[in-house]
Length: 217
Image 1 (tube, one colour):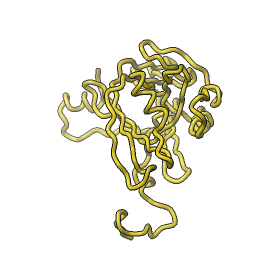
Image 2 (cartoon, one colour):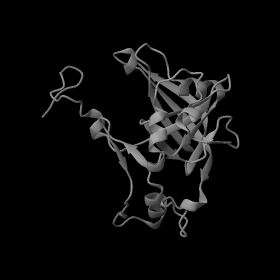
Image 3 (tube, helix red, strand yellow):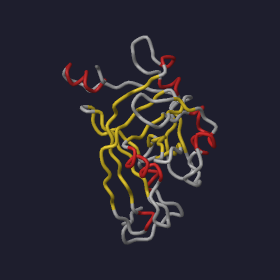
Image 4 (spheres, helix red, strand yellow):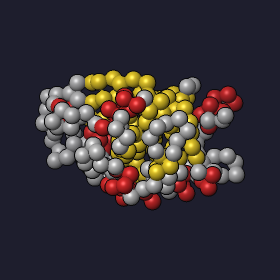
């Protein structure tokens, strides 16, 4: 099968595009508005960019009517956003927080999760989540689309604080990912959960390269 998305009609009943770039980490992001309303929403276009400094990004498509997402506006206006790790135990709360609601609705309350404070960030963290990044907003890169919903805001931030629940740290100092059970976005309505991991080391890599790949502090 082959088709050119820009000029051809998709030959399948469902686009394979989002189902090929999988699994995608979920950016479960909390922000606060300039009117002090807490916002919580998941974004499947989320990623770390580099480690020196710790930079991250998320991409948020506009609504069909051309409105920009509250998360983007809040990050720009306050200068901050928080990443909360989405886990299997929190999957229902993540799903509820994906609902489109009025900007004056507190989505922590709607999702049934608890707020806990940050160190610098004015917004709250999801207390039940095991890992959090406090992110200082850097910039927004707007990319035009072929439709209002195709237009996207790519938001960049620097991680200035990292919070980890001690219960999920192994004796060797690494995170116990199978115990955390992060969830990831697939295509369609599908998600995946990480319950098993395996290790691979690059043959012939130098000790410096190995330390970098392993993330040795």
